Image 1 (cartoon, helix red, strand yellow):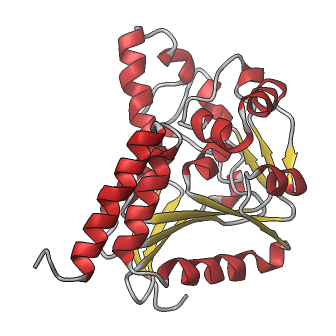
Image 2 (tube, helix red, strand yellow):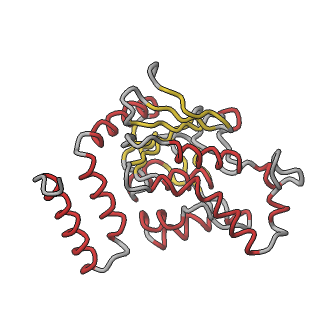
Length: 265
């Protein structure tokens, strides 16, 4: 949109605010490499999360080109690695403690999308492989084009999905299907994504931007505090016991009622 304000553009990531300041769009903008991911891109994604102004209510993740993200840039597995950083071959020679710190840093690019003060929407087209699949899973909601192809390929490379994708995948599709998807590395196409809950909505590719725009408008319609409280409740629902979740609901509703009646003023 012409009135978007660009806040960040580096390492294959662009962060822009719409004219109202309530919607942020994070764009993977290296279509020549099918938005392949690297530590530099993860650093830029982490920075985008830190830069979000407080008034942002919805963050949309999208990608330029025919593919959402082809996953990890295979340059990671060359002896040279990336400019300014070690190759994964080099990382593998480090201690477990060193690797834990490094991978935790990479994961920050994927964790901020779950914040309870905003709702995040991934607009996914074409291939979303490995790290690309996990980045889509990091968002609260996924609107997918009918050409979408999800796949988790880490296991076939002798690795595991380590960019925070295992928990949301298992929660969405169940343990058995998640295990099968990860171990076989097969493609999950649009129909299955919609049927299993990976996709909230599947639309023709030409309608993807419009569908995300409509969903964003609907997400902005209710009062922000009520939305944030509801997201927080749903984020804990599966982990809580019934008693704990019911107590959390009571506490959240009490906060809302006191706010609506001005009792907290």
